[in-house]
Length: 399
Image 1 (cartoon, rainbow, N blue to C red):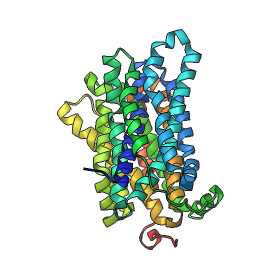
Image 2 (image 1 turned 90 degrees about the horizontal axis):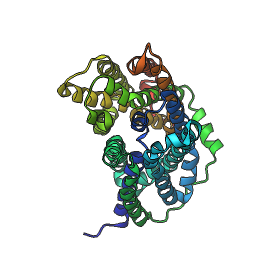
Image 3 (image 1 turned 60 degrees about the horizontal axis):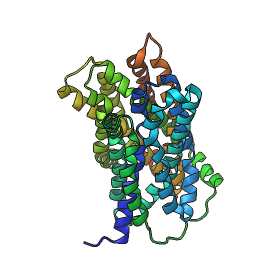
Image 4 (image 1 turned 90 degrees about the vertical axis):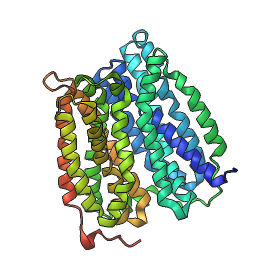
């Protein structure tokens, strides 16, 4: 069966999203396997993630001017150095602390810049390729990235063990996928959107005032929690005595899988029963499931697997629901609102990795104590959500 140009392009950007999030999701497990200092690893993670998130609005404006294909390809390519971290770890002793950690920083900065380049362009293409099935296309695009992120640590850990830390072997399947992306990602020529300046976009978001600010603060808090939990996941599972396969990516896969599986159904429920109401429900459940996960001693796998899936489902739905709420409130500036509530909120939230690493290094707390403190952010996010507009105030602003 011959595939249409639009279908090939969609498959290409979905494959690219899988690749970008897969190669970009290995740092938490790598720092555990390489025995890195948690404070230094947290600082590297926070700074590089912040840079990658902050540049998303700029690349979004550039993508809207007709450069989406180039950003998809180059963004994908820049994440490839991530799978060479195993090779760097093999030579850390020869490099020395300063040079070794400096090289790790450069590698992760390239990866995060690549992700920052790719995401606005990929999301824009996904929504525009099939206008009559926009929601389904965007949901499938997001799910492809979530699938790659879920498998990232498991694939990296498996290759690390099988190839004696030579994780650069992952470049081979990555190169094959990139070849298909270059060959298939050929969107039809579309007129570039009106050249809205960054200043005009920011002014439109600022005009929304309090509701967008509340959403931003709530999503930044939840991003901080996500980063802290993922960052300390290997150490946490190790302390709880879970099997090696769970420590080396299995727990991470379950957490992200829960989010991916529930994300789209939660969106449908929010459209029907209200976004604020759905946010309150999911954040309330997040508080319960998160502390049940973190505070519980080692559970049987029969109990742990569904609890991890449920925790990921509850925590992971806050971001898409919050972004949709912001777009609903400011339809005339939906792209910039999305950049603020996704890129900028995650940039601020990335500090959670540094804080979590610093707390985990304290003997009185350790990884479990650090995660217990991180959970306070859910309660704060819940309080902020209570202040969001309801009823008439939640109707879309005039375009």
